[in-house]
Length: 316
Image 1 (tube, rainbow, N blue to C red):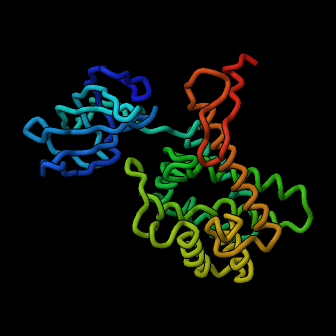
Image 2: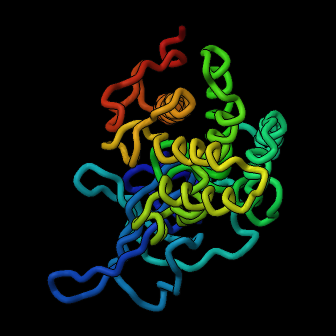
Image 3: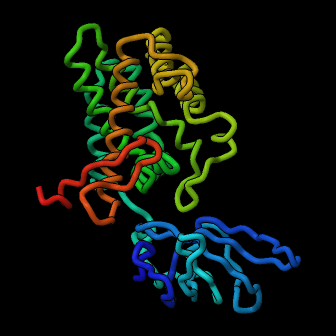
């Protein structure tokens, strides 16, 4: 496999890549050309198809495609100039080459999720969480495969489940340290806080925002999903459901970060802190793991606004 992160200027490449994006453009002379973004699990690269003819066979965004190209450079950034392309056929590639996966096997993550559900004592809350994680086989498969984000953190196969299990673990521990917490609410809230992402983000390979996601976002969608199922469970106390809905609506912590409400209970605050902790630390972990530059410090991280120390590079 000619990994994208290892491509060098002047290199001739015949390889299979994921077509993440495809746009038809028009040059100043009125001639059409394609601008692509190609990806594998190591990174992404822009690719241009300047001549559209029989050698450019039909393909769509989201396809794995076989390209014949040369690595060039545009304004200091590597870029492919593609002369031939076609859809890849089954057996010509391995899916694992194009999508990162959760470090922990997804079935193990799912078993951990079931263990947390088993700890919920309130029958109404337990039935509500089970309705998402145990009662619908299609939904279970979606949960096992879905990313947790488009790009920021856990944006890979099993990412949503990995993030959910981590947040639940952190929230459960924090809840044991303070008085006035409700363990059942913490477990249910952590398990369901990002459930709206199943509808906000399209599944891989596209991993783009859906129309619902663009208009409403995962917080509103999650609230709607939980309210719809929760209001149909006779054993679920409406007051408890309302507290859970508040936790979902406030888990981003601040209005400027997308929460329509700020956390107004200790359980809601713990959920927010658990979510923030896992999302931030995952970004740090990824920054260190995926930085292949020389030296003991990563490149500047635009979102977190700093560089990070790489202990392995320093030999410490």
